[in-house]
Amino acid sequence: MKPNTFAFTLIELLVVILIIAILAAVALPQYRFAVQKARLSEAWLGLKAIRTALETYRLANGNYTLDFTELDIDFPGATYQKYENVSNARITLPNNTYYILDIDGYIAGVIPQVPSQLEYWYKNSGVKRMGAFYCRTYTPKASDPKQAAQALCKAMGGTQVEENASSSWYLLP
Image: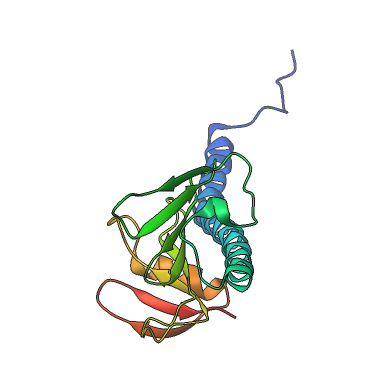
């Protein structure tokens, strides 16, 4: 009987498994970064839409509102929350991204799985960031290093304009 010459040896199988493990170790962090950047980009589009709706409301009514339901914008499946005795309102989308309208004059877009958030300052309340979009880094968990958050803001085209112990600010184009 002739031996089977088409079988793999244990060494060959181990080499293939090792190559797959190395490729996975390199590809998974890049995949995670790409997913976070896509979520941040999606939130940026929502933030721009809210800004446009807010400015349209101001032109029609002479002032800004803290009520998302008064804006001419619709996010399917979103839940709206207006807090009594609190200075902001919140809209939460089905993917857990949420936007905040704050009485201090900013809109924030927050994605819980991403260590950066987007902000747009629309009222002149003495804030030097007025009228521009910013990506702000923060590190809520030790597993999210500050460098990863900064890389996300840079990947969005941001230019660093300020940094302190807890966060960095990147001006977006």
